[in-house]
Amino acid sequence: MMSAQAYIALNRFGLGARPGEADALGDPARFLRDQVGNGAPLLPEFAAAPGSAQIMRELPERNRMRDMAEELLKQFRERFRSEMGLRFQHGFTSPTGFHERLVWFWANHFTISVTNLRMFAWPSSYEREAIRPHVSGRFIDMLLAVVRHPGMLLYLDNAQSIGPNSLAGKRIDRGLNENLAREILELHTLGVEGGYGQGDVLALAKILTGWSLKRGDEVVGEDAFNFFPNRHEPGGKTLLGVDYAEGYEEGVRALTALASHPSTARHVARKFARHFIADDPPVASVARLESVFNDTNGDLGALAAAVIEDEAAWQAEPRKMRAPVEYVTAAMRAFGGGAKMERKALDGLMNSCRLMGQFPYGAPSPKGWPDEAKAWAGPDAMLERVEWAHALAARLPQKPDASALARDILGPLMSEHSMTILARAADPVQGVALFLSSPEFQRR
Image (cartoon, rainbow, N blue to C red; front, side):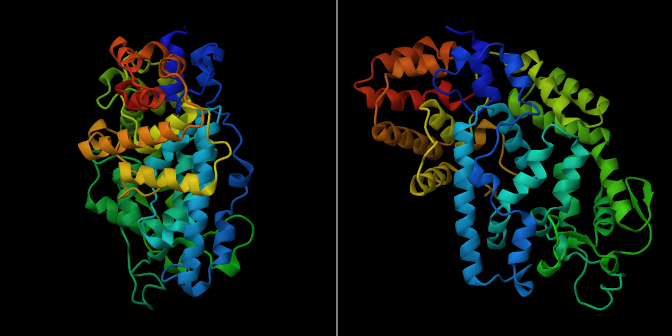
């Protein structure tokens, strides 16, 4: 049997082991390092899905920000479900599960959500354009890509934010919106304890006025972002004690300063350690990741490499509860499935995730989905998992031996107690359901 490290690499760092994958792994740490900047190609249909510029061109001007026509909303909602199905399939089949987990982590860190109907148009292009290209690049590059993307500008209302003393602000009854500025400071960079105040929120909101979108008929090429000087709040602003003049470049300078701020390094390091190590990660692990972030000027590839080298991330005890989307993905990978699933089946999986408490790109707030066991381990949610596990086991065309499946997917991470329970299963369906419901499979 392979060492525990192979199974940890596939399950804790990755999205779950596939049949026979652990036996063919080789050096687990090298396997992960090789993925940091080398994700598997997206499924062709997923890669070819409409980009943000094309979506903007599809939107009638009168519907771009608000009140999309009912037929247009239906079209985007259907496209969203199709694209999320392709995202699921990529997760089920990708040989680079660690790279994909990095994408999922950063997409959650910079959350946008379909809780607002107009947002169904954006998650797929947002992830492909603002997140995926930067998971091994610099934090500032991802931050700028996120803040300039239509998905974020619309989700947090900055596309409509106008400086009250700007030329446009003096003509129309629409003013400053602080949503994006507040979440950049609280969630994306410094963190809630990062040392900023309401005055800094207001200053950043003014700095980002005019950061908006072109009209659909004005979009040329692949960039829908536009800076509107006539909407930008004139005059200087002071953010975290630093003075900024007016203009687009000052916004870039402000975001660059936030990206390299020590509080940002601390905030990102804590979240990264919580995701890969434990809900309450060791202080020393957080400190090491913080140093790497600071020393490399926010190199996210170096951050990923650093967590691979952290001994705490390789402890055999599974300390992280799988969120519903992770759980369903790991189950599909365990059976080698998902490559040719029909749309109806993929819709069913998304609905199952919703019943377990998590809908793709449906986080209830800009905080994103929680990354702690207590969020997913409630009795109702766990009952949904158990019922789903039994239903999946019953639908499998070929029923594997549960003990052999457990050895293949989790190896020595399965406890003797759990293996004994599997051996006593009344039939293969019950055995597979018990494996999927086991504490070891629920966690990573």
